Image (cartoon, rainbow over all chains, first blue to last red; front, side, top):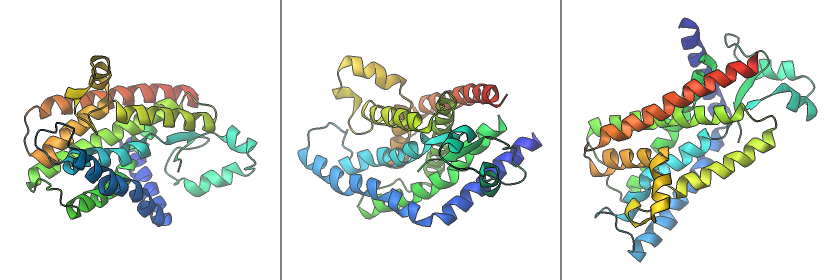
Length: 116
Length: 154
């Protein structure tokens, strides 16, 4: 139990570090949802073809736009395996892992990472 | 188990950032968000559960993939149908019957429905079913991903 709480906390710190390091990514990620809200929403609202139970169309798709950015991020987590990276020319994989991992996480040869 | 849970809950941080950014843009565009803090809390909980669910689902798929490019392809192939076969951009009532069946097993349908209820309409009618579906989705894939993850580590 203590071990898993440790791991969860460590992964959160890791994620926070990543966000801090790639800060511009937060803003570039927001561009696509903004386009949905600013362009697609008002255009479809003008068509007035969809029965939305009296909710304005932009409000109707707001939950979707939120989920879209989340789910797309979530579905891109994948497992980085050393074999593949070696094949791609990352020779010092042990060092690379030690740079991204925190010492109290058990990540000897497998790293879960976000793919951009 | 702890790695799977840890990785997926770490994504919450980023999710909350995105939630804040998009919600503020929506408010700026004149969308009336339900001001009741209770509903805001509910919608945050829903977002967190869903995000854990999707992350774990992704980890579960990733355990079967040996090559990164193959995973990228699968991710793309799943995302777009998930969005179009849900009640996200058009209501279920105007869909043809075979698609409605897919919509009913799509977790995104329940998320969007729940978020719409808590953030926009502001009613908790039928919210329990949505929440139950999401919890089942998340727990199912946490179990599956943990089993598979243990298999590839050994």
